[in-house]
Image 1 (cartoon, rainbow, N blue to C red):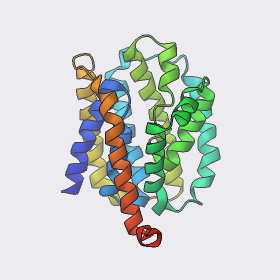
Image 2: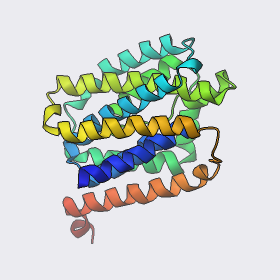
Image 3: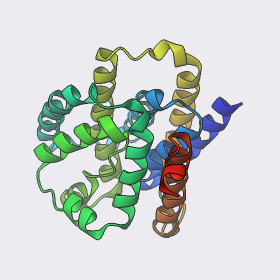
Image 4: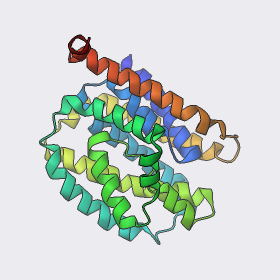
Length: 246
């Protein structure tokens, strides 16, 4: 039953990302610690987000532009090689905590957001987006501010951004394959997530220019904050930090 609930959540978050180009992957990531063991969160999230982004690219393929993709590829590959070496030294039980802290920083720290939005190089963005993604799954739309400067058409921004994120997830999965993660042990939830992500992308592309989505910018930070705080609380209980502190 939990797999079905996760699939439903995935459908709606994938649709949200198909409409706005942001938020969906982060929301899904925030829910996943409630349904999956810590060691499986990033690999399974990467699998479903790859399906979500690839399907979004396919459904929006008429809006593809490869002008800025090459520098992003180079940066992403270097990021995979550099940060991939560090993943093996990270205690995987702490991954949900990393996710929660990252969510809170990106939603409420103006300093962090100014820094993330200041990147003007697709080489650097590819490097950071892949590297951070290995630890927190959804590094956030680091590429979107620069894409919005390069393109006036939102359909092009969403589709090119999805192409870039597809590469990030491919590289991230390659690292976890090399680390020996047993993807086959989770094949049922992976199949369900891939299918729901694809249908969600299709729905998002169809609804992109039909629904007023301005409210998302207001609601999204609060929703993500609640999710992040729950993750922190659950980890505090799990590791008995509450008893230590109080």
